Image (tube, rainbow, N blue to C red; front, side, top):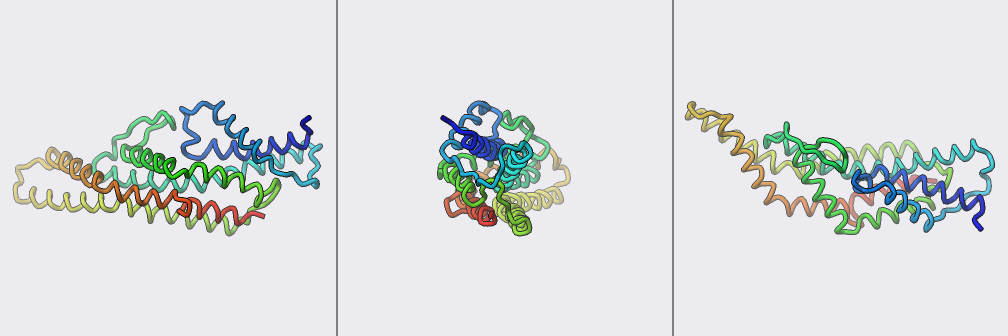
Length: 256
């Protein structure tokens, strides 16, 4: 027979896992049925069944509400780290689209229900495939389940170190995103310089008619030959000892 304490333990664990899966990329896709997300979160909660300290008086609604809000916050904080890491490839895609000429073009992504630039979508799909290929989703779920040990129900995260950890991750978005996008943007810059020289020598040429197709062709060629580099960088992001799990472990280390 299920006791009230067991039900509360399951419910609080379900809130943390459900909040996490509702926010992180791949799990938050709109084309994934809600019943699948809730069922998966429920199964993980049953497996984890984290303990609840006896000092919490669960007979009071105020205590239960406080614990539920705490689990929502913890789930959002852990999900924020994953979202920021995936933002690296989105930032690179945005930075590539503009010089090539796709800055004003976008495609509708039914998974998120909005318009996103072409190369952001391309890099995001590549990143998701690599994320699944290196079993990062399994390690990530294990890390969230481990969070119940280091950040128990009602446990706190050190705010100031957590803030600086997030700020350092935001810095990595620009650094690694530029590493992905810089070869393309540099090549397009050289192409613009070459087109400028040609237009200067032959003023009769229409730069708008000639320039856009050339820049698109050159950009696609550079993106194609740069795919091995992107795969390597994305692998470093999602590997077991990669950037994602270093920051997730760093955030968990701040619990107590």
